Image (cartoon, rainbow, N blue to C red):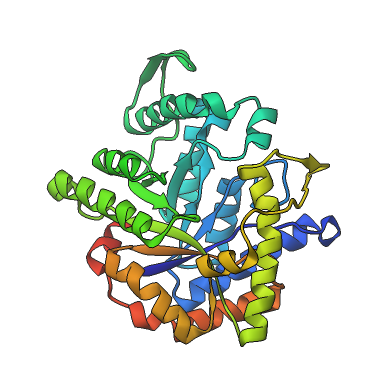
Length: 349
């Protein structure tokens, strides 16, 4: 099982400055590259102060210039917000500029606030995503493409330059429902998912759906990977663990507001709203613990067949603490999982 660091911007204080925030994220990426993490992951979100990265492809190029080997994943690019005729060319350029280290995770969008204000409300985003994905894959795959659909109508055109890799970079689908995972895998896509607040059985169902789809592809499925995202942090002791859980609870007060709540945002800052879930219940669903406990908690994921764990460590801790967490995780946790799922990792490089 491999590991990715999710460079998920949390802009709790505007006075900190976006320049400092993205410098912190770049420093995390450079450290992840040096420590042997498989990948770093970039979100795409607009107009809000969590998961705040409106230009992930640009940042991917910046990271590639500062690192040597780490893969760079979008987690995820929100296709309905882009014109695929423009976006396909941007993807090709980013793949060239990152020297083939880009993995393109794609999704429909999740936060009603930003989707409404950018003109693609969630009630149409699934339909537009489906057509956008078809257009994107056609533009990357075929030399000349014309289209006559609901959201796209255009005469024959050719995306230039052409992809260096046939069909462009590997595409990863963001899917949580097991049946959706199965169908996306059957179509030949890598998968990114998360159980969110789902129980262990839900995670096993997600893995089973991926494995069924992959098996039905036969040789064509070799190399497809399943990545799973979790909030995680290495705590120094019980007091530090309690402090990090408290920080995560405050973070989720904002996350819930825009994910399942009313979307109350003022001048880019998401209002923290009371949560139905208790802090004790949240603590049970997060991977915030000592290195020894982390090894125990990650074991079932490796045994289930997860290829890559995406670690979200940016939920309120300071930069020095976050870098220390990444260092300790690499030195004390990652070695226990070296070699798990190795046959599937090689194809994504």
